[in-house]
Length: 409
Image (cartoon, rainbow, N blue to C red; front, side, top):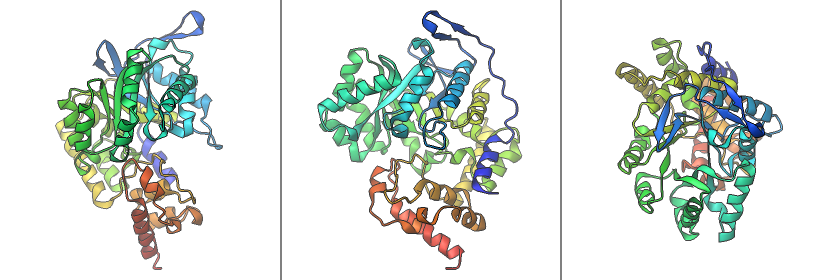
């Protein structure tokens, strides 16, 4: 079984029929559409009910030419809204700016107060004060709105935090909030717990925080400490990377078998969502959904939602621990690390994470020779871009060595 087939089978297995709500979409004046609640479990945030399933814009459906498939994306957004999803997340840099445009286009036909739109300020794109206004106004235009419901300082980590402070990005965002162009202000955090303490305490303007939380990162990468800080700060949490770049939507065959033996009718991905949504303070969980099957499975999980039982939690922990024994890489497949000479870093890491032995060799050799790990020249550019702060050149060298050892080279 090749990687593509394995992923497809893992995501679709035992999904069953998905019953969407029968809520109606009522046309209003001006051709807009009012959205009624459709049964998705919600979180009470001030006077809002935020769907616990959020529609992530990092991994939208793409056509072969790399452009967003607007037709399919529109269908998925329509399906999500009909089911009760009302939180849509994008960012200035997602899909080279195409994500904001696609999201704005898909949401345009809906009444503005029927959905919540979130986007983010890219820290390192700001070189001078004028950049703040230029980027923010460009985002409003791309998204076809005159305000953002939720707005975040994007991808804060040690290497860019001082840049954000130096260029007064937070005061600018606070100004936009006072002017009503931002309703709720948050921070998307990619750093460690000590930095998060500093960030959340630097201003009283934060309304929420976005964190990378999942079972893989919980203790291994101290996500539990980040969660604790957010709870102590009384900031609602938006979860990013709930499936760790798709890994927790499939795991490997040994780990997936543990979950399927216990409940063959539950998708692998549903375990992660149920574990996360059972935690206190989780406002919404973002899911990047490339195909309708991803969305339908998530809707099924969040309608008539039930957190993991104590017994299920033990089973899930067992599956994760089994996976961790064979996998050492923390790549989420975000593709920020684009290699200037063409090494396919995300795919190399994915093959390493999902396969061992002959299956690893088989799928690794499906990569073009020009895309393989041995072509890395150790320039280090990828390392500076990685939100996970992985030592990518060193990891590529290890994978190259693994491949050559298995091949007897």
